[in-house]
Length: 131
Length: 131
DNA sequence: CCGTATCCGGATGGATACTG
DNA sequence: CAGTATCCATCCGGATACGG
Image 1 (cartoon, rainbow over the protein chains, first blue to last red):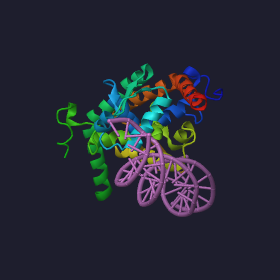
Image 2 (tube, rainbow over the protein chains, first blue to last red):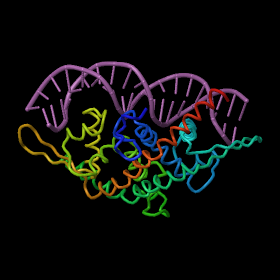
Image 3 (cartoon, protein in one colour):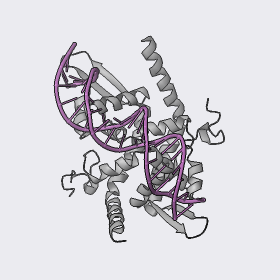
Image 4 (cartoon, each protein chain N blue to C red):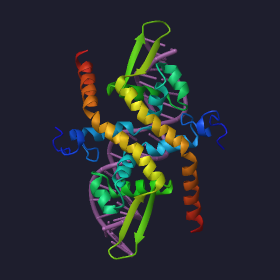
């Protein structure tokens, strides 16, 4: 029941309140691997190994785990080809593509403003030392 | 040095590669508390206690820690009033407001599509049991 | 090739108590 | 009021080895 989730807000959900569905959605999204895997799938259907190579540093464990969560939440579709050697492909659903556009903006933002933030961190650091 | 950060991509940064600045920015953003605190600050300047009440379930520890990170990265400005009882206010910087617009879209999306995801999870669950 | 299984250290974050 | 300090369970996530 979400009746205690601020019914006066749009869609009857309020991410600021724990136990609201939208809050748990936010928790799911709050993962760098989700960002990157969704980003890697945005251009189109990809195989497991392609994803692993695209998302540098992700371990099989985290890649599989992330893909499973995305599949469970209806953002990614998984297709298995019964061939040898095995071939498994992943692609975004409509819902997933919808989200990917938003996440992509965040990724672009983080690339655009990386210098600003690097400077801010540097200033913060020297403030600690001298001030 | 970011010379190994895909110089052919815009801004010379590539979030898909570890050790790239934009990757660490993504890591910072990948936190539900960052989402919520930035969202709570979006309407305007807020006191510590106001934030704590707005973001349901956040502990003093996590609130302080989150605010410090946001301050360090130049997204939030902190102002202390030397009065008794203490009064401390937080507000978004220009950079922070810029980001807040994006994060807000994610929050809205998570509220809009919460039902879809709830259904997807339910379907995934019954698939496990029966299939 | 596409995963699963296992181990394990360190970080995360919750609860609680306390202070200027 | 606005934090800090401390304890502690949990989980996250990395490395590695192995399996269908």
